[in-house]
Length: 88
Image (cartoon, rainbow, N blue to C red; front, side, top):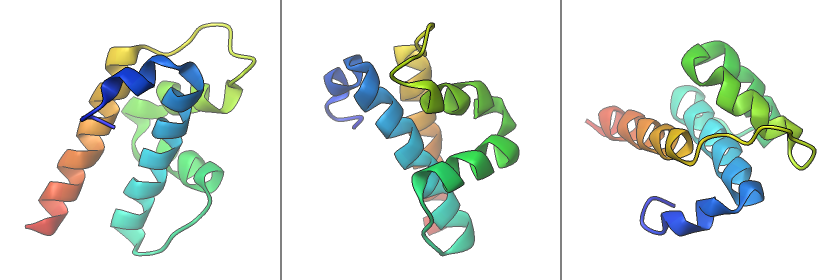
C-alpha cells in the first residue's frame, strides 16, 4: 500500500487499508487473527491516537468528512514500524 499510495485516493480503499492495518496490529500483538471490525474496535482502545481515523472507517460509504490521505499513510507507516520492532 505504501509502494502504490495512489490507490488510497479512493476513499473505500483507504478505509479498507485502515481496517486491514488494525487487523495486522491485532495479529502482531495477540498472535491470532480476528475480523477487521473486531480488530478495529480493539485498535481504537489500544491505539487511541488513531481512534478517529479508525472510527471513520466504519462510516464509509456514508461518511460526511473523509479522513486525511496523509493521516492514512502515517497509520500505515505506524503499523509497519510496529511490525519491524516486533521482528527485532
